[in-house]
Length: 312
Ligand SMILES: NCc1[nH]cc(CCC(=O)O)c1CC(=O)O
Image 1 (cartoon, rainbow, N blue to C red):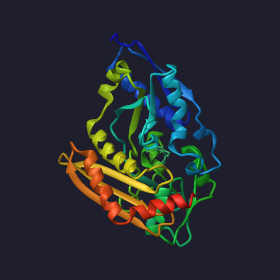
Image 2: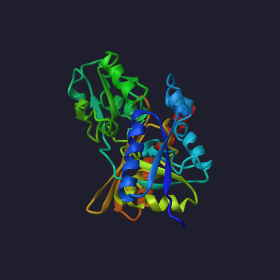
Image 3: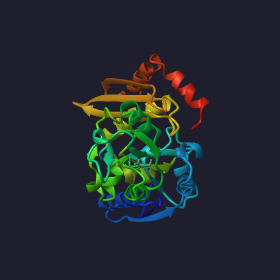
Image 4: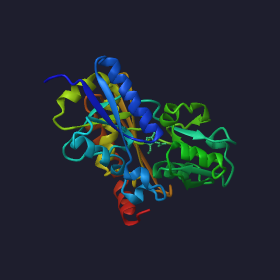
């Protein structure tokens, strides 16, 4: 295998995606000083369609398909994604070759008027893009009015600043990466908002068989983040998780033991199931299966059936 001299990163063109691609470029150049790394910016269907909720227009795959085509056609060697946006089952021919160390996995509370969720008065309007955040919030803070909020990070913050919302919720990781961490008024506790599977981590996808690229990515891989997100993604996979499923899964390592929590809810917050378990770090999948079994024992199937019956 001749070592590569130049590689190309496929990336979406939102400010966050470009930041993440440049971050990977810098890490690759740091570990491989003689390597040339180029970026190939692409617009995906998910970036183009902004007036409909993501869950309606087809979900996570929308943000990655164009990048995968570039990998397949050899126009790029790797694609950088927010792991949260990567489908639980990759299409045939692609592999998640590397998961980088996770940023803060929590959701952030952002407001120009209030400093925490529990300060919001009756009827306050909270914007969020995710069914998961909406469901958990409706269950815990029924007096708030949870409304949909889409667009990239800058658009969402602009909508807040224009006064359309009293507060918005965003993944802390994205806000911090874009250097806007000072806009975060509070981080939501894991009890108020358990994060989505993979939230805060970057995943790097390659085409199968590109062992030359995988070898270059090895020093960027973080084994701890990988086992945690493997457990989270296994929960989501087992429950058929997509962005149409208000599903949260979050794992941490405590003394080299995995601690996994998950929650599945109805979008209106009228039912929220939660489960948790601890287990060996070498067995993220079986730990996830145990948590999924607990959710099924609490009636997960009826929630999944209800979600299928009423597309939102
Ligand atoms: N769904 C969009 C998305 N994908 C990744 C992030 C943030 C960064 C991350 O979680 O790694 C966001 C924005 C958000 O949810 O607020």
